[in-house]
Structures are given as structure tokens and as C-alpha cells.
Image (cartoon, rainbow, N blue to C red):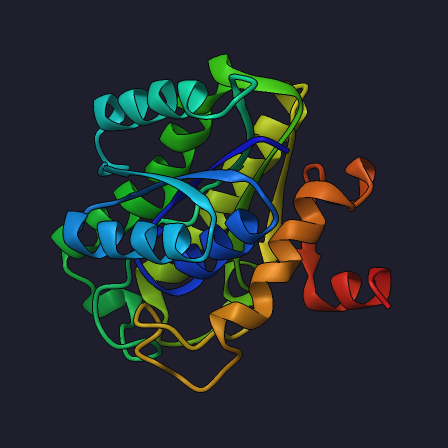
Length: 231
């Protein structure tokens, strides 16, 4: 693998995935809305001997994402994009305390715009640049499939993102899948107790490089499947 794009790479899971891929020799192209934080992550990658290109981009803006993918396609040595991790996401409010009937219309709209449309935009704009055998992944969780009180628009958005993945998987030659990470302790989840982002980053590397295509394409792959496959 030569080049990977990671959205939402300024912190949490996105940062951990970017740093893991870079440690494996991949040129990582990072995007987030906060340029300062993004540059800091790129600096960490470079300090560790990796290669990173940081580009401020908002996945809600298809023109931003179009430019991001064009930049990524030229960033590596071989050209094109080998892997996309559509990780950018938002949660408005405290996790578990945002029932759907109390959700503001603006909060609902923005959650879907980032977490669903942002996934669609990220993969769609990457398609013209994907190399043969390229793969794309979207992190998710059980709340997308098992309704749980208090997760409101976020749960709806994750279900929508998984539907976007299934449709792309049905229509593209590239492998497109969902990785269910379980509970991860990040700023997005208000640091709810869970796994550290660094503990799930290897799952993305496995899915991008070692997992059988049929295992991940159009599927939701959980921690159990990953651990059994890598024993």
C-alpha cells in the first residue's frame, strides 16, 4: 500500500489510524477541520519517520473533499489512492443523553450531513482515484443496528452511514466495509470508558491489508472477527 486518506485525523481514532498506517510505510493524507491540530498530527508522523500530507478539509463540503482526493492521488510514489478511512464524525451533546424527540432540527441536520453525507462524499470523490484493489472503511458501532435510548441522531446517522457502505459495496469494484470498533474512549464519545484509539488502529491495518475481501466487502466486521482472524 502506498497512499491512504484518513478523514477526521486530527484526534482520536483518525489520528491513531493515520499514525499506524504511517508506521507501516504508507504515505497518509490527513484531513480535518482544525488545521492547527491536523498539522500537529502530521508533525508527529514526520517525527516518527513517516510521511504525511495534512490538508484542512470539511467533509460537509464536496469541493473540499474533491480537492483532498486530487491532492492524495498525487501524494504517493505510485499515484492514486489505495485506502480510504472515512472517519470524520460529530456528536452534538453528551452520548446517551440526546433522545431523538429532544433533538434540534439543526443538530439533526448537521449530524447527518457529517456522518452520512460526509461518508458518501468521501467515498464518492475518492472513486476516480482508487487503485486496483483499493479498500475503503467506515467506523461504526452496534448503536447503528441495535436501538438504544438516548443516542438520537447519532444512532440514526450511523445506520445511514452503514447503508451508504452497503450500496457502494454493491456498486463498486473496490472493497467497502464497516468496522464496528465497540466502545472507544475519545473526545467524540465524551471520553466514555472504552478502548484506547491505539488499540483499535491495528484493526484498520488488518482490514486494509490482510483481511479476505469477501470478509469485509459490504459487511460489518466486529472486534471478535478481527481477533479470531489475527490469533
